[in-house]
Length: 485
Image (cartoon, rainbow, N blue to C red; front, side, top):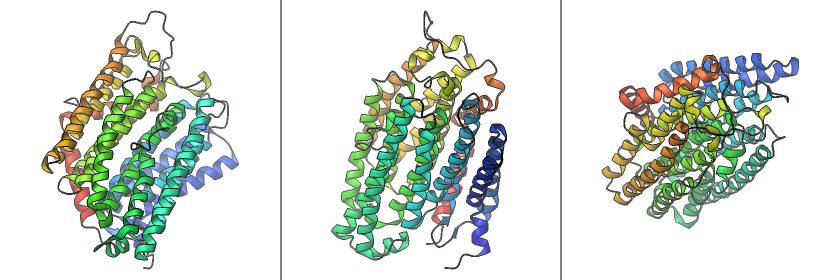
């Protein structure tokens, strides 16, 4: 297939992000200016976001190794929004950082381009390239404040996790190629349509394990909370939001396109992993006294809920997945946003311990309100967006008659309710002799503060009136199903 001008126009959001990264790189080489670099980054990401409107009218459109369909556009919107929030929070976070600050935005842009490539992949080569482009800048982002031992440790641990994921992914791709002679998803679907064979199933299983490392599914989750805890606030935010969305979308695309991933044995394994991920993620979060570690375990549990969509993979699966991803990314951005606003690298490690938040209500009532709404949404309480997402996942399980998965979601949610409410109670307790960490006085009028307040408000609005979100997801899902092969 020849790459035409139409294909290039359809890839314009990705091209704009890459072009912005080049501009930022040249600007850093010419003259360092933290605010100017941050503004260029935000402008570039906004242009890419706006260009998706034009791309929507061209979709669905397939290029040799990428596809521009509803799912790719949906993922691109979420990844770009997450990157915008991280860039905005990063400016406030790094304001008084004594080391080089501008490279953080370059790493963020490169990782964003990797995430967009990964979500639009229809070929093993672009899947691998996108995953590495997403992951490699994240090593640097997580270890950015390297003078802090925990930050350096987070970068190294994520590097080791990624190396294990890459090894499994490449071995799985090699086995699938040996079985079918193809590396593109359409070729794999054709080659494995009748009988996947032992090598085909082994290849699919290894690819699932490789992507499972990236999603921190049990039992591939062991260092995830350490990485979340040690990474600087904006880097952990990007890892927990945009990175996870990109990986889950490509996994969903693989499961829906290639028959070997729908094998009964693999489905049974996925169902067991889903139950284990929901329960173990929530049970381990119960014992945490560090908010970033707690959010890390919470993230593990939420991707256990999302695995239900992969196990069912028909009916409401696509719609439920997209709704849950929207809700998850908003709540994650708001929760990590509050942590980032209270933290700064020039004051030591991030304010992640729960005692830093003790009595926050009496000092920062609006920031406390945002964190409270986030905790309620993560718990799936009505009138928050989290309730809509949890309702969709449970409806999906009920529709498919997977009662034990539904039971796992309910038990996991009940356990989660305890530790989310524990965080909320801490926010309102009196503060005798506590260690004081606080957001700046003018946090509410700064860009990072405005973004966090806006996301918190959106969580409530979508909980009360979710129709626009559901309609948008249905339109995107319809465009994805109509994509060319």
